[in-house]
Image (cartoon, rainbow, N blue to C red; front, side, top):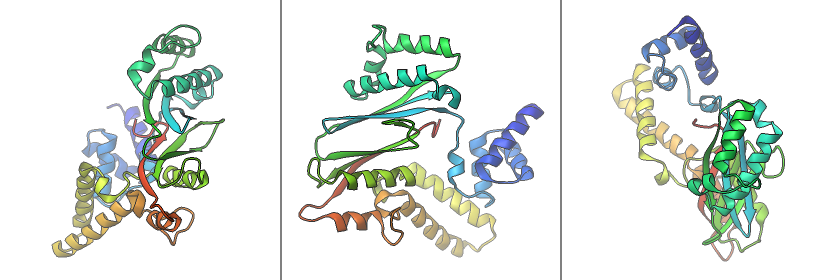
Length: 288
């Protein structure tokens, strides 16, 4: 790795973790330049804490949502820079793609072969747009919510225009009648956008994520020099907090820190129990 590449990676790692230059260099040396492993190394040393900064990514683009007849389709299209994400040709392409995504019910294979208004396929238009703008553009992911079983509600954060933004969340609720109290559904979607849960409840969180977090917690405590018995007890408490912080029902309600999401649902329920059946959150570039 050249000195320039090393300095660039140190800068990125500092932005991700808030850790000083020297420790970032040590972490990169230990991890052979791998940024993700460097973050993990620093967390195990107890130097860096899990934070929203770790989710930062250079990927740009737009997320779009289309709702019709109670059904909702989500799509994310990535560009390399935010400058391109504001380009009107790119925005127009994304908006037409959002309509096609809804018709295709989120099927990426169908989308790429679908015809656009100019009679060329999405795939052909994508190639032409890349050639015109001179930057890589990719259709990253989609999700479709049908109107069976419950009602769908969405929220757009950092909205650039109607149904276009940087973060979009959708939630499917059971127990609300069709068209009834959409405001409450939007509030739940808003909470999801802000709090980024991994699953509806603790049991829904991927075991690999839980095991990795426990490994990091134990390593951090061991490196702090605490006795083994104490380390086991502390790690259980920290893991419990991690599960609560990342499961939707156990998260602190963003509009009232004295309540959890589960409490708000219980208060809102009358004759029918209101339940969260599904949710999805798209943040542009996250995880790329």
